[in-house]
Amino acid sequence: MTGCPEYSHIHQGGVVTSLRQLAELAGVSAMSVSRALRGAPGVSADTRAHIQALAEKYQYCPHRKTPSSLTGTRKVIGCIIHDLTDHFTARLLRGIFTSATEAHYHVLIFESGRDPAVTSMAIHAFVEQHCEAIFFHARHALPVSSMYEILSHDILPVGLDYIWPSCDMIETDEDELARLAIHYLMELGHRKIAYVGAALGKEGAPRTEAHQRVMRECRLSTQHIYGFDYVDECEYPTHDALAAMQAKHPRPTAIICHNDDVAAQMLADLWSMGVQVPREISVIGCGNLRVGSITSPPLTTIEQHPEEIGRRAFALYQQHVSGLLGMPSNPVKAKVSPTLIKRASCAPVHLHS
Image (cartoon, rainbow, N blue to C red; front, top):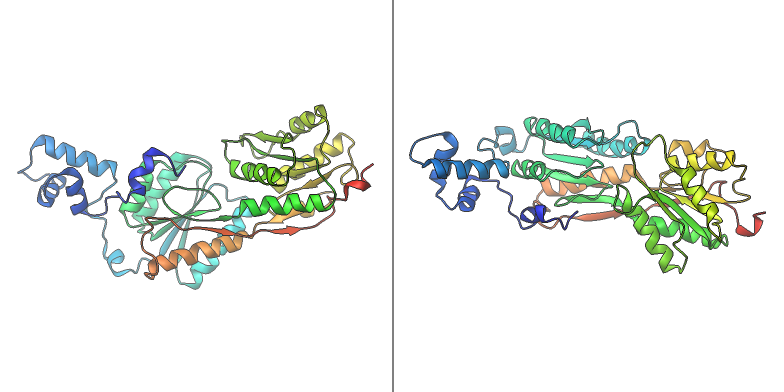
């Protein structure tokens, strides 16, 4: 996403945050811009239309500087979250909320539901509330007009465990996550390892790509990588992946799943097929979600430390506010290391019947 041409002007520092910048972009004087935006005489119709079009494109608002923003006393941040019912997301918010309240900030939360229109509406609301930063954990591309609106109002965008262009990003180290799962299974003697997650090019694909890279590093076959679209998070096509595994030879002796929800459904499908876990096949999830501790057997998983992601995201924002970091022309990308949690869903390959 960061290489998209539509974001190139943002990457090159072309966000319009002042009347003078808008004047330079339009090729006219600052006085002409002021007159055009106020509807005052002395500007031709063509020039006025040109200036107004640029102001709209770059989301420039001549009155965006409120007294609170000038004195640095806004003390409000916004969070746009794709699903407030998700356990991982709740822990992520806890990290932000705890740090923000300790620093005497108000936190506004908006659920996007994977709808870009709702995200745009939330951004408008946060601008009106004079938020200093917006933390994103959303699963869709941000419209370029929304990014201009954020930056032209001196609002700092921060991504949470998801890749966004032109903003700071705190995320799980996906390559390390893949190595934890794959190396652990290899220690147990597994060499035929499957991965079930997002299809390449779809939402969640960076995790699939990481597992593909690490499998190649370890000289393992990547023939058992199965991807799907995230259409309905209550129903994953794990049964289709299992059917594809059954049709291939050699069949995998272990399965790594995108997250614990996918792994829990995988366990249910395997049980319905009469396949015993971990006696016949090992299964690993990801996220250390609540469901993983109550499955049968309890699920081996990867802890991503979402509270730490949230805390570090807020700390990064505070570095910008304190002046240690300026507005990011080169966004900061930081990674949080995951941890393996061993439970009962994995066993050495020689114990398989």
